[in-house]
Image (cartoon, rainbow, N blue to C red):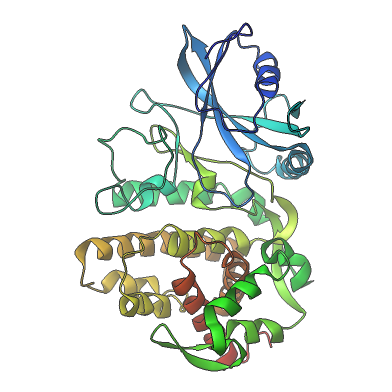
Amino acid sequence: MTGKNRLIHSELPGGVSLGLIENIRKGLSLKEVYISSFARYGFSGAKLLLAYRAKKKRPVDAPYIIKVAKLENIQKEYRATIDVKPNFRDSNMLHGKIFSSRDRDSGVTWGALVFAHAGNSINWKEPMTLKSVIYGTPPWIPRHYGKGALPSDEVTVLTDAKLEKCFRSVFNKLDVPHKGHRWEKRSIVSLYKKYFRGRVGEKRLKIILGKNSDRMRFVFGEAEIHNPIKYFQRIVDSVNTPTGIVHGDLHTDNVVLDGHYDPTLIDFAWGHINRDILVDYVLMENTIRFNNFPRSIVLEEQRFVDEALLDYDGTSKVLSKSFNDRRIGQCYHRMAKAIKIIRGKAKDIIGSKLTGERYLLTQFLVLYGLIRYPDYDQIVATRALGLIAKRLADKRHFL
């Protein structure tokens, strides 16, 4: 639809006012703009849009990425992005300002941040996220994307080599912010409260565990586990932590790929200059294991994978295993290759002071909060929490 302001929009999400888009159009000095939704998964409920320079009602050139949310939330993200901007080249807000507009119907004031996207290819109508290429496409693995958001049908999945290169590029972007880390004894509550969101995760776990939620040890999903709720309640108040500058919300839908599969990090709302840098590694690992992974699994084989990954170098066990289903086995092997890069990079940055148990603690604490999201595989993630708790509790770590 084209109006007198020469705004061209397609699939404009509800709640996003034309007034806001018009302010952005003027701010970008575009005669015409073409707007479309950018389908991706996120925790906050914010909307992502793609804005293209338009010519004769058609999009041209690489798109801008626009994040839209209520103004107070955008203001928080703006401040967080400004804090980490000197260390993350991808936090490239255009004009360094917030665009805003009040919606007359709802009375809500919406805010928006606009980011440049580095590249685009004629083979792709839109950028895509890392999530869309990590495990594959139909018919055997579903992809959860909105109408019109899929790239060309002829592209299904990255080769292992390209995927590994992509993951290395992602974590190379963390070199500058993470290399300045320092070890400090910090309060667990202050470090991870954003991920806990109160006690929502614990409430979800009580529903999943049922009558076992009051027991210390029991069998769950064909594995003996330590009750993650009980372990969480006994964890020490503070722990030595490698603290530094973090992205804070590094999952596969916050990594945008251009037509050459070069990654750009987006969404710095949870960025911080003094947090546990391990969060950036474990959140990505948790996402590809418990959120992105195909649901068509065998619990016994999944248990083997989760038990193997209790060891910091456990990816070698996964890579050497032959799985019953060849296609799911390929997914496990791709996952293990990605995790090997993630953990290897964490070790390179932090050095010998990083132990497998310290990595598992951050992984446990972040996953304990993420379990509240239905997009996470509730059974597999709960069992993994219990296995981590058992490993740490057996050795009296952090109690």
